Length: 496
Image (cartoon, rainbow, N blue to C red; front, side, top):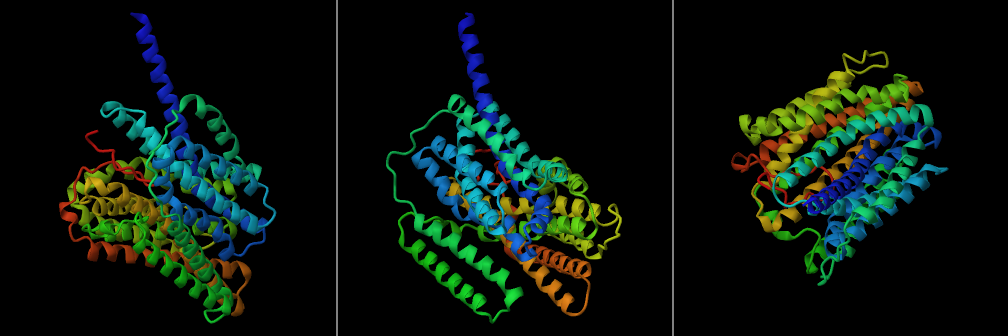
């Protein structure tokens, strides 16, 4: 009688160890954005990078992750999730190590791109494996809740860890710290994770489309970065515009001709999907810039040490994770999805606007604390309305593609928000320097311009809610569980 119980106990423990390994990977990939945001001023200073160059450290990771996400999620299902999980983690680990020893900005940016590719390979596979560990019912619901908790705490942990690491070990440590964690996961994965064979049919995949999309986005960001320095009429800018148009035109042509496009055209016909994806893109396009440029401001203008900079953002990160996320559904039921989107869009924009009054000597409690807490809380809820409105009316057969499109929109918003904000900052700083301003004053003025861009993006996001949410009143609440990173899996439901 005891042997079956002991076997069951051993198997259950093995399942939960496997889940811990997978969720640790998810946590590490999520931490990477916020931990680098705290380290960015030190990276720019030590590697002698301008703001428009330094933004590549953040945006390149997001763009490569976004560009390959939908393809790699499909590849993991077809060719084996375990295989893609291991491959992605190895790529991410090697890129972290090489990025940590980078001697110039170009090498660091290149390794951040490889990190983004590794994350695109590993994350969809990790989520799919995690779901396969549990049967439908209470165990899966518990695992889903824990996975979501890991996700919401990732940004907060990155802010804290980033401050500590940069303060005491230097910015390179924020990249090196990935290596021992990943090596431990890789050493235990063959023991605790089940190998799968994938789909033997192996249909043709749109690899060309994924490369064209990523190349078009990178070229576009390069063009945006070159305009403040060389002007709109420079050959760099004109060549970049032309190359972007060519690459994205080729992408559209490929998508219209291949049998298995990255984004099936039929999903664009669903009510509110495009407007929901627009909100999911515009929200981080607004607020990701706030996190990055406010971190730069308090370290390079106000003189905060990296540790105190990390702690300065910790309250807002905890509010987002512990308060905003659990309140999403109660508020959505009370106000309705469209009204909630409008209210939270206005509130997020108002919170971000507080940063326009920031000065080098501004007290933390009167500017940065309310700006990040209000903006973060409302921004999280506004983002969730985009998820609800965009996915509520999608048929079960298309939820995988639709939710992956939402993940793409999220990562694209992060990349573009930081890129545009850095371009605006550099243009304004250069104008102030030409007018005779000191270097610190020019930097502060440029960062205020970046904050203004974030506010404008918030206004556009709110307008997208007002104009675009035509069917949100009938959105399903409570909704399925969706994760704000990676491939958003469509088989998890509230009743699972």
